[in-house]
Image 1 (cartoon, rainbow, N blue to C red):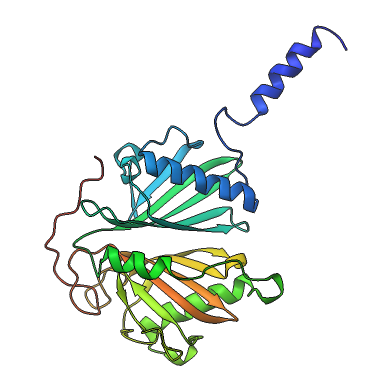
Image 2 (image 1 turned 180 degrees about the vertical axis):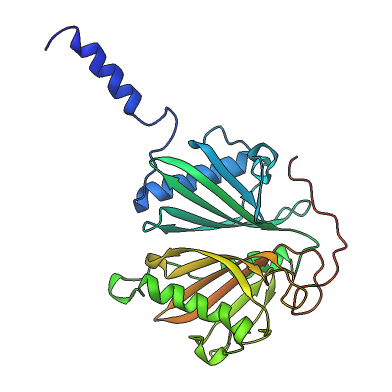
Length: 289
């Protein structure tokens, strides 16, 4: 080989290789899991230096675009529970996390979008003490005891089935057509810590579903492998008669086309009543240490 050509080939290879210190992320399940793992490490340390962030990164907290330097991602946390959805169709991840720290408890849900080996979007939803239904002990207790494991290939629901199940549930808040929701039995719902069901075969998630509220601004992350779908949304459109418009996530586990578990988080201070439009009294926690 030409002795002058080899150094240029080596340099080109170095420039095309992933940045040093970064796990290789991509739109495969392995690549998306690597992205989720990098995020979890960053959130644990409160340091984003290990994240391969795209130029022009979009960073959002509770539906509010903001500068990542001012974000909760810079608060170090000991994460006591986590699970991730990996969406290879849209190159996204969603990670549910619970921080049981008595002084600074949190429930968080973070969405990443990967683009050509870099993280192009980070969207976070979080709640803590003083927010709607928040009870970190209950959330951790019930969530960590559930089985959201891999569903055998032949028994997996399609992406369309999962999104339809989630959408039917959310549509029922506006239309009141609960008969169109694919209720499963047993089904348990954990809402910020409030929990339905008693561990009985007849446990149902068809309880306490108000009507006349438009669950708006939806976007989904779907993982057929674990039968799960999450909707980022707002609880109402923010109008006087349609709910508070508070940032919200609804995470579903679906088995055989039927709802099995539902987790919800709503970023609303001291909401009162099922319309979640009550007064706000508590002060939000500082985003950084």
